Each structure stands twice: as structure tokens, then as C-alpha cells.
Amino acid sequence: MRADSIAFAISGMLFGVIVGWILGNQQSAGVAATAAPAAAAAPATAGGDGTRPPAAPLDENRAKELVAAASGAPADAAPRVELGNLYFDAERYPEAVEWYEQALRLTPNDANVSTDLGVAYYYTDQPDKAIQQFEQSLKADPKHTKTMLNMGIVKAFGKQDLAGAAAAWQQVIATAPDSPEATAAKKALEGLQQAHPGGPAAGASGS
Image: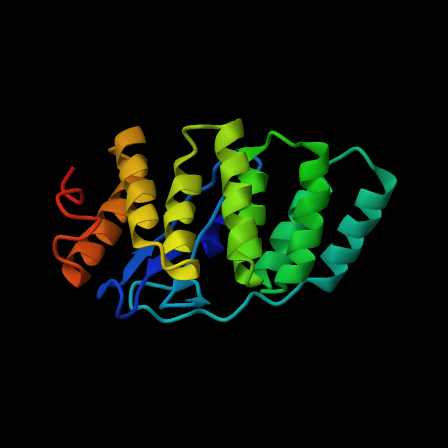
């Protein structure tokens, strides 16, 4: 996804808070892992006020150029990743899944692409596949905090697994306590604790 369109948000009655967080580029190429489910089951990117910005219009000409580039370079993941990003930003998630899957077949250990694919699975109502993909991301990079953050979101909103979500967010904090992802994870845990005092997040948000 483009860096300027990446957002992380937690909202709704479950957590009782809205956290807007822009996640920066994960690689110099501009590939970044995102997560943005909002409210109980509806994923959404969000700004600081919790509103959802409109989808980016699909640049049809650029898409055609990238399809041609991908066709002419069957071993090159880059145009496939960019196509995945392009379709994701346009909220055309099934097409994003297709291109991310193609890219990942060429670069199976790319945790960024793997996590982008997992998020796209979530947006196509496949939380189990999303979690499985995040597990693959963590095998490739056990310290990939954006994956851990996303894992918690999908477990909370996609599977209603609050204990699993809390564990994922605690892992973010333990792995990179000073990172933006850790700040977002702490806020998520605080919201979870507010909603469920004494529950799975008890004592964790201030770690």
C-alpha cells in the first residue's frame, strides 16, 4: 500500500477507543504492511476522528502498464506487488489478493508482501486465511511487528479471540517497545482493559 494511505484504527464498542495510526514504509521500495479493521466486523481505514476516507480511484492506465510489465517479466515480483498495492488502495481486495499471491510465489520469504496478503484476506472475509498468512510472515521474520499488530486485530475482530489478540499485542510491545506499533498495541490493550477489566489485557497495557 502507498505510505500516505496506510492507517491503523481500532474503534467500536469492544474497545471503546479510536486509535488512528499511520504506519510508515516497511521497505525502501514502499511496500508496507497494514491493518485497519474498525468496529466489530467491518474493516476500515480511519483518520484521527475515526472517519473513513474514500477509496483511492484505480489508475487504470498504471494498472495496464503494470500488467504488461508483469507479463513481460514472469520472475519479477515488483510489478505484481505494485498491482496488489494499487488494487488494495482502490478497495478492490480480490484483485489485490490475486496479485499479492503471485508476488509471494516469487518471493516466498518477503514478510511485507505476506502480511499485505494477510490483510487483504481479512478484507475479503477470510480471517482464518489471514491468520495463517501472518503466521507465515512471522516464520520469515519473527520480529515483524506490523504482522503481530495485524494478528491481534484479526483475532479480535475477525475471530472474537480477545485472549489471542491481547497476546499478539503484548508480543509487539515485548519485541519493539519504542516502536509506533508498540504505541498502537498499548492503546489497543488499554481499550481492551477498559471494556473487560480483569480480562486478558489486565496489567499489560503499561508494559
